Amino acid sequence: MTVQAASAKQQENKEFDQMLVERAQQGDKRAFGLLVEKYHRKLGRLLSRMIRDQAEVEDVVQESFIKAYRALHSFRGDSAFYTWLYRIGINTAKNYLVSMGRKPQVMQDVEIEDVENFDEGEDMRTMETPETSLMTKEIAQTVNDAIAALPDELRTAITLRELEGLSYEDIASVMQCPIGTVRSRIFRARETIAAKLRPLLDTPHNKRW
Image (tube, rainbow, N blue to C red; front, side, top):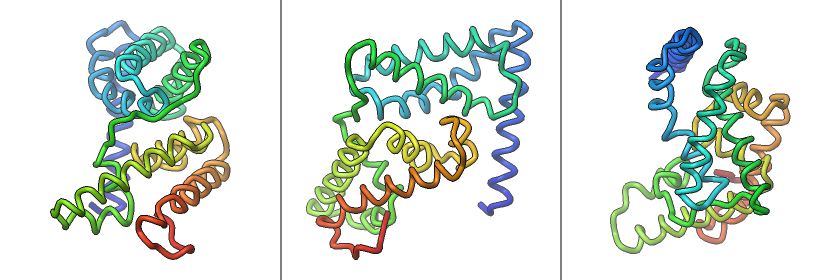
């Protein structure tokens, strides 16, 4: 897909969401239900980077959608619906963890698909031996552990960019900070993760993922 086609698809997606939001604001609960169906899994995946227990993740996701529904009248479409929803989800998760006296954690289960977002992961996909399969899992675990150890701001930025595929503009909207700050956070996160991967991949010091 070309950059132009991807941009057009993203714009179409935003317009469709906005149409559903407007219908939901007029009392169409089915329209909001479609938004829930569309973003339930994505929001859960994002929040699983902050909360380890999947049952708790589901509870926070549900609470996030309830908050979004109650605040839907205040949504004016200045940003994409999903950036607004993600912001609600992140804040809800942070509040939940604070109430529990805990800090954000990464899930224990390794998501192998995550490693395929990295440059080195591209090469690993063509190898199917037990040794390389183990290596792929080790890389994925290392990446997950590195992300889990990042400060909240860096972890959220890198998750939204690399795992959710959001643009820098959308991330800035979700995190309510300048784009320059987003770029800095992602750069620092990548540097930290690259440092953890070098012993496994024997990559040069000037190469990030």
